Image (tube, rainbow, N blue to C red; front, side, top):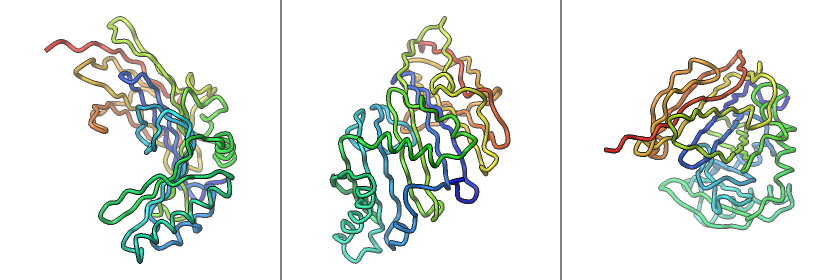
Amino acid sequence: MSAIDSYREHIFFEIRPSDGYVVTTIIFSNFAGPFETSDFTSEPSFIELHFFGGNLPPARAIHWNFFPPIGTMATGLSVTLNKTNLGEISEGRLVADSMKKKFEDRWEIPLPYVNNSETTETITYTYLLNECPIFQELKDLFFELKPPSGFGDVVTPDFFGDYGAIGFLLNPEGHPNTWNIKVTSVFNHQFSPDLLQEHSISVKELTGHTGIIESSPDASASHLRIFVFHDPSEYTITSCVTTPPRISPRSRTINDIPVLEFHQNLRGSQASDIALRFRIEPSSPP
């Protein structure tokens, strides 16, 4: 198979009533990718590389650092380098351009330079094409690389909804010889605060997956996380029932937004679906 050693698989299911979106993201960590990792990690200044194609709505998914324009098809690349390992800052652009050219040559597309951003120790170069003529090729590559069992089975040809994206992340601090691959599907869904209305959101119904959802025997971890974003000033989430059953939520904040998070490690097990049934109740006036 395409995994290198033991890989990890993750499903993130985001429900965003205020924005009207439901997001499914599947990430495979420690996996094979579009290039040999040494093509990039042999560079002393290299820190991280992120290549993506597709589109996401204005309400950003948790696990995407998308570049403008949000909501339209785009192909992009970011390359982050360590400034202390560059003789001159101007060398960084040459290094990033050489890495960018590998993607341009493979997919025969231009990736125009947009800008760079700096921190005390790093510099990140951004390249963006305001269209994604290779989205089908990226999907084909994912289906070629994905494991023969496990969470990858959820990604069917019907997986991608109103919005979708595929990304490849290389970060040698996590595992120097492997890639992270992530696929995201976003569906529009209207949620109305109604005391009498119960909402039920299901991964299988949204993505067209049939059958059970099970972990891969080759995965060292198979994590499921359901996130419900909510605005206590406008409404309250109540009566939550999860599939798999009996997952207790914890409250946290992501990007300054209150979130209910349900987490379970499905390694060595299976679930009939990944779903959440809940009610949205209008908040009482102060």
